[in-house]
Length: 377
Ligand SMILES: *Cc1c(COP(=O)(O)O)cnc(C)c1O
Image (tube, rainbow, N blue to C red):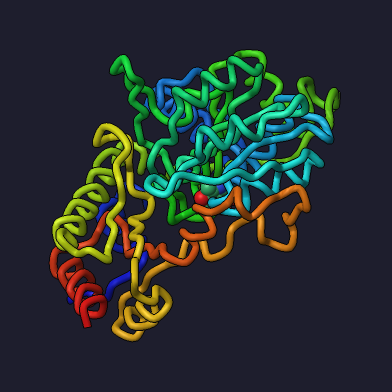
């Protein structure tokens, strides 16, 4: 059996080696390292794929979130509602901009932001909601957009884990995640569903004025050379990363399908196991692209299971072990533990299994039987 990895980047590379190598070689030869034609080409291709009017590439997913918030003109003291159960980047940029993060609980089945909790958290100071399409499953965007419209709030989708997923509206319309809110961010970190070979990120929007504002912000606030109209940042996707992404983009649907197939095999193997709760699908099959395959473990010590797996050559991840509202940097006396019962429970139960495009049946069989034997021992 091949060595099991949490993410098999080399295995995936072997399948596209010639294409990727020649696209990188091209950049080396023409030395268009920054703002080269490949960046623009990738931007156009991603706009087409997502069916969104504007993609603005940038340096990473955290920058993308920060720049999105800067572009919306959010001001110190504005409240931004986001999920307690997510990667820290989401809340970090809110705090960095001196906005006030308002963390709320998530659903126990999808792990995505709880609609009732959002409603409860809205105050006259609330300016934006940041849903995260956690682990690759779209959040409940229809309800979120309704609340936002009703209260005149911006919706910033954190699509770092959800690229390629659809959201299906109740009338059956399908829209790609990241093309629904006022603005969205994504990350091309190597392990993400569309990953480059370094750091990368992008912002998406259908709003022409906002896109214009953001194109200046990513470039030192310049709209005309050496005229700095607003305070900006330096955040660029470099041409070598754009070349890698441009090569991988046509494979994204196949990559996401490979993930979904691996997820379906895990599901089948765990069927009937009372203490293993497999990932819940909230909507149509294409609403989940399995950035992570995350189980909930009941009545068994989750950390002991993780150690058992690691001892047997099976990597696994605890995403996330501590709720954001309990992190030193983000504690706030306004928070009430009773409002975070789901997140407080999830951090004890979740375990994410190896998930990537190259998992084979033998590996899945070894992983699932090792887990089942431990749980029933
Ligand atoms: C990865 C990730 C980010 C940050 O992306 P980077 O490119 O690493 O800065 C933000 N939000 C979520 C939910 C992520 O998973």
